[in-house]
Image (cartoon, rainbow, N blue to C red; front, side):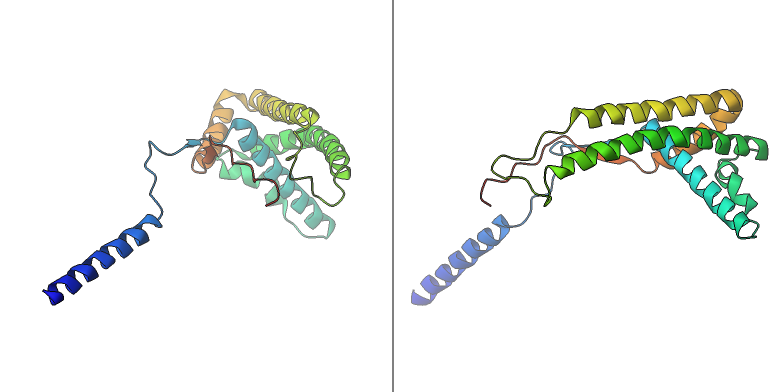
Length: 196
């Protein structure tokens, strides 16, 4: 009877220990429990990247030409990857060149506002008992302006390329951006309690 009782006690301790261990294991989330949503990359971001890459390659080609090297293929590299003929690839670079200064203007105004905001927090910190400051509405307005500018540049490119050429380019842009989807959380992070 004593041996039976010690075996029963051992089994009970083992069960309690196992249950306690399992309580600390993470619980896998099912799709229904998940608060994340996968969305395709918006046109304003996809075309901003396209124009940025075209401008960066143009700068590389121009710098190489200034150094006496021939890197003229860089000028139309993005367009060729998109399956555009040489002339249409050059139109893509021209559209990026026209769009660049417009975006630089928005970025410059953004930086001025960001410096102004940072100057209020010289050590990069804010009072945690109050919480972070609300976003400056001017930055939101500039973001909307930047998105509109990119979409206007995209539409100008559509007018220059024509529907057939633009459809080829747009299909390539979306095939590249659809493979890189953005995961968006619908849940806000909880605020850290004051003093921690």
